[in-house]
Length: 105
Image (cartoon, rainbow, N blue to C red):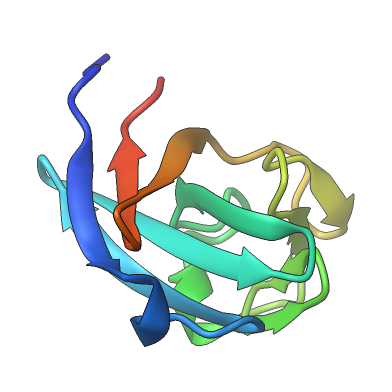
């Protein structure tokens, strides 16, 4: 696990209701700016390994583009089948109007 913060984008680049994929230390994550704030998660669906950034963000629900599985962007837990396993979430902070992420487990 890394404790290093990685500066990814300006907050202006991710308006509320949008998401964007980034690669940090070889790991692809998706940063979501939902109505409840900013969140970072693994960008791979736990069901069929699709890229979640290609799906839809509806409030706090991230919907996989392949089979419609959904996850809570606040903690990565499953909200809708066919996925049954949560996805990892990562620490995120806003520093000097920049989005920064530190990878978790």
